[in-house]
Image 1 (cartoon, rainbow, N blue to C red):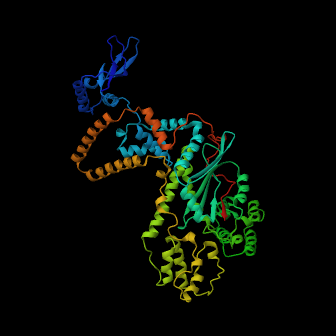
Image 2 (cartoon, rainbow, N blue to C red):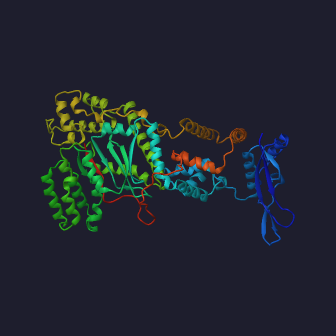
Image 3 (cartoon, rainbow, N blue to C red):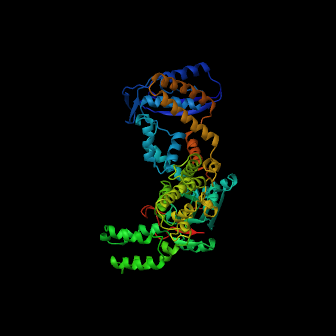
Length: 605
């Protein structure tokens, strides 16, 4: 058995006081009986709850030292032998606790706490407050807020200028491991200039729902002057889903030129939501607080039932009514009206993206997670993964609700029952509203309807249902049922992302989660029984002693590196041949949130 000698230098009797600890591996077997006696002595010492006393000793040079008064059994002694480094650390911690001096040293779980919180936009200070609350107060928290902040600093420094290379390595690993994963990148000399990626679920989303996609080039990463561009579509549950993502350098004009080259048969338009969001900042304070102005402009620009001529007439009337004739912004918006006003897209299928207010707000909420407290690219990808997991979890919930529950019908019509069996639940609820209105509205008798609901949203309107009901049709004609709104298009079993990426030991992670869950359950059940809780503590102490003998000692520095590697999902490379973009943004140069000039575009393919 390996043994550890601990050399302790204390008061040497010549008036100089020194404290030092030297740890030396001794390969000769020591007296096991003495080892057991010392270990037992340390285990049985109970930390004093009384105020710690100190001796003040002055050296021959006039320097004063505080020497703690602690039990002699706890003091490290020269040539004492220990079974393992874990025993040495345990001895030192017990001595430090009783001597009442700072003994704060982070472990693997502390490092993971900081890193995991960073993925959810929680900084080191708040992470420490949360951990302190969970621990039951500051007296039960072994590390300080400064420790958390320093580790965050060390983790950022550890990545340094290797983040672009690590990002490429991480995606390359996914390309080798994950079925259906795709990515491609470009470098300008050695600097990363653009990267695009999509996994299996994103590609299925594009296949099923890629008839209309939107992408937004107004998000910028914090450290590097790169723009994050998420490509979004509307799935069969009428929710936003990612069909691909990109990081590009600040090249707005190049992006716009690429659109017609890639989507050769597409129609492009600017996002109304981003344009209308600016209105209040472009008009006077008087108009800002004029409810009539807001009502008139919103009723005009969002109207999907009028054509170009009527829109232009009513626009000029609005400009005259509110004295906006000389306003340059409104003049410019009118000049580009063909690229954002619904009246010019009346006959274009938009799959629900025409009304983009709530859609964009939902997307913004989803994208906000990328405004990270972390600066490097590989952590950016981690935050992206977290947001994707959240999005796909919601997608799987929608699928499960559609498959396992039955809606409440509003009528006795078999047509409504048939609709519930073919459409996803959210789409069925929209169709149900149309059917309910049919029962009260007999204003039309034609399937060729001028309301254009089928053209815009790709499911039948109330007027069409009126005709079908009058003709006693019991099921919706197949030609009116678009696949993109049907049930069960994206398999639920491939929605969970993290374990599919192969960057985590799935079995190990499941074991860790299971242990946390079991301890949590035990505490919940036995919270009012002190004897059971005390017995649990004793059993855990025994188990701790057993595993310390089985598991090799790992110093905190190695635990720190392992935590960073496990969190980022990629090793830190020794050599770097791909550099991050040189357009680094420093403090004071903006918030790094939204760019103003490259607005979200919608592409109807």
